Each structure stands twice: as structure tokens, then as C-alpha cells.
Image (tube, rainbow, N blue to C red):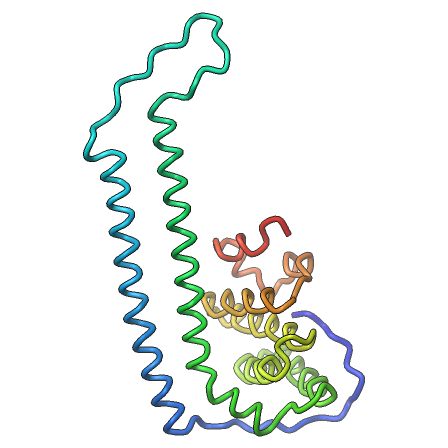
Amino acid sequence: MLWKGVALAFALAASAYAQDEEAAELKKRVLEKVREKLAADRATLLRRVERLLDEEFGKEGRPAPAPAPAPGAKDAPPPADDARVKELEKKLKALEEQRDAVAAEVARARREAQDEAIRKEAKREGPNDLVEADALFKEALELHESKSFPKAIRMFKRIFYQFPEEEIGYTSAYNVACGYALSGKKDEALDWLEVAVKNGFDHFDHMRKDPDLDGLRGERRYKKLLMDK
């Protein structure tokens, strides 16, 4: 959890808003499309990997052993097997990047469908300006610290959807990630961590030390997010 100074101390009452039938139906349709797209993309990636393996190892057979370098020779070229393995690793890395792009798109669609009611709530009830956002941030922070994660997450999301490019907005997105991480929802936590960084959150030293994120340290997406930061 990242602390942020709050100028005002007044409290803002927040009420839970039940999803209406239209939002629920929209969520159902979008999630179904997401599931179909994810299944199709996974199958496509698997076929591509299988083709790569066939090309490298299945069709042509193993290459003849490379000739031994002459005595005293320097900078001998790598054996043929090593070169093919490196080429295969490059292709697999490219496929992994494609998979990450698909996963990010799926996460975005899922997030938009699930949070439709929260966006409506934010438009209707605020925060309408940064003063109200500060007050709501303080209230959400207190809920987070008392481990009322679902309520805190909802409030932080309201702030983010109203002010996604402001510091208080992308800091709220980071705190959503923290709430999900502490709730054991790793995929949602990683989704929101990526949202926070994409929108401007750059406190990477804090991110590395934050105990809220301890459950994510071994995740590939977490490591990739902090690479070279």
C-alpha cells in the first residue's frame, strides 16, 4: 500500500451499488466472448509451438555433428545444435510475447465488463473533483488497513475511473492491485499492477519492498514489470 498525503479530514459516505440488469447482461456477453477468444488464441499458440518443434526437430532429423575445430583455432562457430536451439528459443520468446499481448487484451475486456457498475457509480456519486478524491482515498485506505479489501478495492476503483491520469488515480490502481494480492487473487492483482504502471505509477523501489505484493514475487508477469526498472 502506498501512502498519500490527504489535505482534508471529512469523511465521504459510500453506498454499495447493485448491478442493474443491463450491466449484468453486458458483463455476461462480454465474458463469454472473452472466454471464446482466449480458448481460440491458446489453441492457435499451441499449434504454432508444435509447428516450430516439427520444423526444428521432427522433419529434418538431427544434423550431422559439427567438425571439431583445428588445434589452436579461435572463435570457432557454435555447434549446429546450439544454433538451432538458440533460434528456437527466439521463436518461442516471440510467441510468449504474443501470448502476453493476448492476455493483456483479455484482462482489459474482463475488467471493463466486471467494473461497468463501478464506473456508473463513480459517475453518479463521485468523486467529482480532486478534493473529493482525496477524501475517498483516505476512507479507502482505512478500509484496506482494516482488511476490508472488497470495499477498499471498490472505492479505489471509483477514484481511478474518474482520474486515471492523475497521481491519485494511478496510485489508487496500485492500491487495487495490493488489495487483490492480499486477497489471494493473483491474476487480478497483476492486471491492476500493469494498469497502474501503464498510467504513470513509477515507484518501483516501493513496489519491490511492499509486503502487500509478497505473494506476487515469483510470478513471471511481476518480474517482467520490474525488469530494468
